[in-house]
Amino acid sequence: MIVVTMIEPRDFIRTRIVADLDSGKCSQVVSRFPPEPNGYLHIGHAKSICLNFGVAQEADGLCNLRFDDTNPEKESQEYIDAIQRDVQWLGFSWAGEVRYASAYFQALHDFAVELITAGKAYVDSQTPEQIREGRGTLTEPGRNSPYRERPIAENLDLFARMKAGEFGDGAHVLRAKIDMASGNINLRDPILYRIRHVEHHQTGNAWCIYPMYDYTHPISDALEGITHSLCTLEFEAHRPFYDWLLDNLPSLPHPQQIEFSRLNLNYTVTSKRKLKQLVDEQLVSGWDDPRMPTIAGMRRRGYSPEALRVFCDKVGISKSEGISDVSLLEFCVREQLENSAPRAMAVLRPLKVTLSNWPQDQVQVLTAARHPTVDLGDRELPLAREIYIDRADFEEVPPKGFKRLVPGGEVRLRNAYVIRCDVVHKNADGEVVALECSVDLDTLGVNPPDRKVKGVIHWVSAAHSVVAEVRLYDRLFRDPAPDRGDADFKTCINPESLTVIREARLEPALAAAQQGERFQFEREGYFAVDSDSTPERLVFNRTVGLKDSWGKVEQGGAAAAKHGGQA
Ligand code: ATP
Ligand code: MG
Image (cartoon, rainbow, N blue to C red; front, side):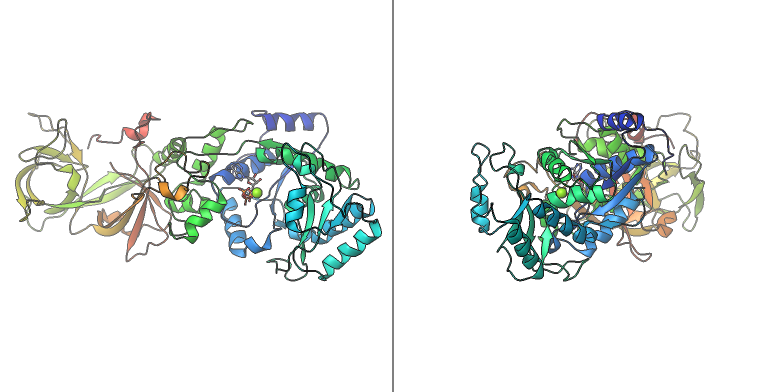
């Protein structure tokens, strides 16, 4: 876990918090992360989590996890469980027990009664359409409801009967009495409560009136003693109501709402509604499909929590709307793996090679370091007469600059000997199906004295290798802005976002790989053992390639330099 240090004013929110601590406006920072349990968390939420838990940690304060569960129809226990798992996996722990806005339903109700009694809220009996029409537009003021001047006693009576279940859904609502002509539509008598005869995952059938999010949030913050209520910019226009409400409930403390810009990522959809659509319409295998920008998906794909935290840190906190480059995220993932993932050889598209001068039953057990710079020990690499190399490492008619195996040419087997291709076997269709090569037995760990062998390729022993399924992922969307406007985001799904290789061949040390373990398959990329994997049938996900394959500026040469390299 992160060591507690003094909070540094490295963005406008931290600057403000430092000022509030210095001035004595607050003595301990209390923040909260308030997800609605209506979907899985995604990369955008990771930014909010890192900010909320981050500032609390840095300031030696507290951060609550609170489910803003006021929409029972769309919520479920599955989401509640997934969200807790994801926050913990990201490396954070919340203060005390998990909180639920629904635990405050009684208090929220009582504050509503307080507002009614003070003449600041009323029961409106217009139809939902009439209420919508009466609200006006950005350019036109709204109209007062004919029920706006109801006597307080009548409002109290109707609200009590709403709560008692006397009315059907939509028959009445409770509204704040503010200003129907306000330039801010959120202040045009916003709805505080509506009738919904539905069961709630936490409160069962105790309630048939449910508070609105905008009403629930400020009061929940206040009840929890939140000092800084950090939210995304779209809530800026809601702040006047946040403040109005707490100004009119003088028994409650008044947290400070501060808005920051959301995280947007190119080639990525970060709307829960759209992500849910991908799941519901089975365009992906589930919320944790490794192509999903969900925390569960990224975890399954092999991203580490540290990489996500570093990414959120690099993106930073500001008020300006921008689109972050998904390459930056991939860079963070790669950088973290470069320094931690053990190396292994895996042949994704096997081509059989017979080493013609290698004795029939001879097995030589070679060893290689698991990591070039970090001491992770060694692994054993048995070499026998029959091996597999990658189909892509042999070309009969090589393109210019091709440094790997060609007929009559030489190449080094990584961590082993130099071989020369003597015979090419083809099938009836003219496809290459096998090679015969001879081994230069004097080249283990040394270069031949009389000639230069440029290429180095990876390999596995045919008899000793383990078969595995390898899933190669590409971006889920081809369009850099799949989330844009009304365009149907599903039309730009990348049809090649998943390629399944059923018969890859891995070096034998990988036979014991456990779910979640991450490796660098040398020359191929970083791979993680999938949750579908079993000891009988290993399944790997490609987490990220060794370098940015989308032709962008190469960030950080270290990872890219792994291509080729010496034996
Ligand atoms: P919904 O449409 O369901 O409200 P949401 O993305 O707002 O979706 P919440 O569960 O309400 O989801 O989000 C929890 C917290 O995460 C909120 O404080 C919200 O502002 C923040 N958050 C959501 N999306 C992003 C994002 N892309 N970048 C930064 N913060 C985000
Ligand atoms: Mg929300």
